Length: 389
Image (cartoon, rainbow, N blue to C red; front, side):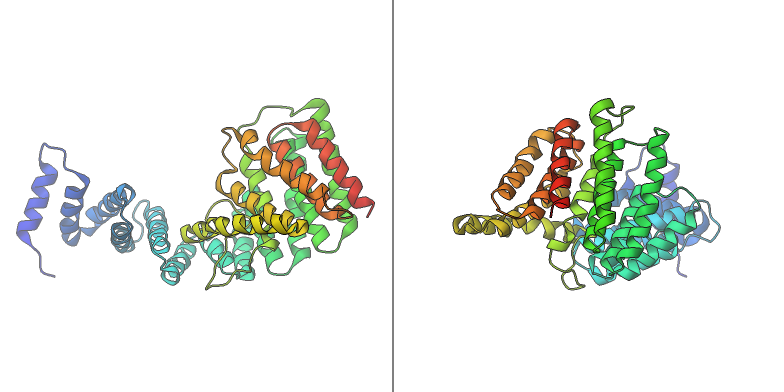
């Protein structure tokens, strides 16, 4: 190895000086010093280059910095303090930079490396985006069973969603039942919200209806109705912080069947999780709004109400995916969408399924808005419509 002694001396002088060097100056010094003293300076190089990455707003510069940080992190000696955590952070940055530039195949390879060092969530999302649901579900199962801890809503919903996408509805329901059982225990102990239990029960009812298991779907809806009755009469037993993401995640997931099928060439969002969407996939999903809105105009003019109701719901799904987790003016922003959905469905004679869906959608939104009495009325009507079919 050829050492540039002048550069090394300059780097030491910079670090020993009394001034405050910039991050760019530190990176320059660490690049040189890491060559001769990697044990000391390679971790410092990783940290400062990653800091530069977070400051950057240029996608091409982001990629160069993330690539350098990952190169350095891989060269931090085994057993060094925080090596694994540094590597996870830089690989996350590296895959994000690759996806941002549309380099999906390379980004997936980095996600595979990330999974090898113990963080498989991102790879599971990427596989789900490409309709590789079974592989994604296998990663979810491994991650869930290896923690040895209480499973989170986010882990179990994504796992169930990927199993359902893989054509395994009973296995998906078994996972979701575990989540429901845990949520029931938590609500009994006042460790989670009754609203979350209601959303989960309604989603489970939809899962079982789709699988052709009407009795289980009906039972789940009736249990959800009893939860709403408790919310009407007693309210939440305690105040909770913002839980809108629980609602939006399940609502967006409920619309997956109406969307185009994903593929490696035309990826779609990893429904079942609010986090981990690739930037290009999120942008593409929201970019469909313009075509959907144009389609709505044509369907209105042709008075094709069933198709109009379906397309309007796809628009609401995108709105919820975009900012359904933000509490600011939540009820004001979303009420017109759900009211219109119910109004449209009521204009469809003899179409109790679409009306029940619209009422259920609005009911769960009203629960999110903490307006429990009208939420109960809507769900009660939906339950009656579906049992009278």
